Image (cartoon, rainbow, N blue to C red; front, side):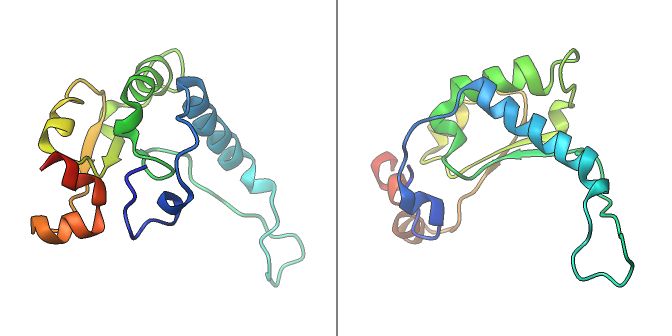
Length: 141
């Protein structure tokens, strides 16, 4: 949706935003996969039935497949109701990062209450270069 020239998913175009429940479901499925991954055979191994060991998920980054700042209400709800909620996943807000190519400082300030660390991907220190690779940033200069 930001039409960044370096992003393959950006070229696909935005279909719709995820709901808070869909965001939480992705984390649930990833958690289930890492717990069950020890039962998966490792390809091209010398041992007859090798097992893949994956560490538990300890950090979460929301990024890709659309900019989270374009869906800030559902992202906030997913984080508050599921990701950091003690009766759900119970992650610390300091282990959750929201990554964005936010088009402007105002867009970044607008998410001040999101219970996560913020990674603002500028991609360039120069506005001319940034506008070339992050086209949506032109509208908010």
